[in-house]
Length: 219
Ligand SMILES: C[S@@+](CC[C@H](N)C(=O)[O-])C[C@H]1O[C@@H](n2cnc3c(N)ncnc32)[C@H](O)[C@@H]1O
Image (cartoon, rainbow, N blue to C red; front, side, top):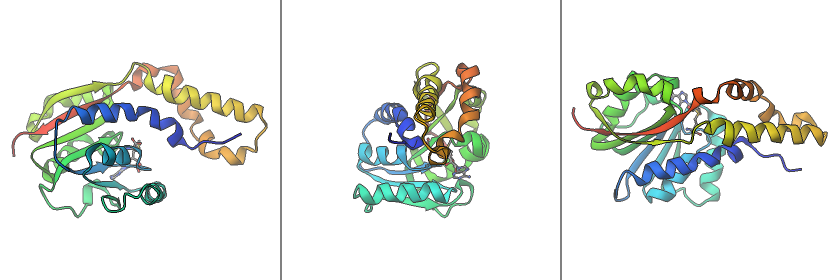
């Protein structure tokens, strides 16, 4: 039996990345920063969608190594780069990006600091797209103008998406691996998510997400 990695489950959500990107309108070969890119699933998707130059930034070196393998295998080295840095201490110059993309990371870094740094790095009129849980983003919506952004669109994920499309299939996979008596050491990368499985199973609605589309409208 083949043992998948977590990308195998995660990639189901790329449909929301694609939908959000399509709502940005036409931008010729944009320069994009994907903050907290992890293993680069949305980053690579953005490279194909945009035909632009894409930087994936993360503080997790092991995730970046997986990302670098994908960049190489897919022949994207000339326009996709993996950067090991924290968003809060990066070396990019001000107003150098057309788009900043952030899936599941601003709630970790903190919204106010993340908006401030996104504002610094974006050109005027540039787009900030962030995907997070509704419960974490909603309280921040009223403060966007203070940070120089307007919210102009939103892509809501399906209700209970994390449970239906990610954790339930992961739970089933773990059951199959156990039933097949596969050596558990071979799928530790999956069993380490067991606590998340039971947390999300209990209250899937709590983890409903959206992609929020923001535009930098003032300094
Ligand atoms: C929930 S994961 C999301 C990964 C990826 N964006 C995705 O949607 O599959 C959050 C990522 O943010 C990264 N991260 C946390 N703090 C960060 C920081 N200060 N700067 C850059 N990345 C950070 C973590 O290492 C992790 O890979």
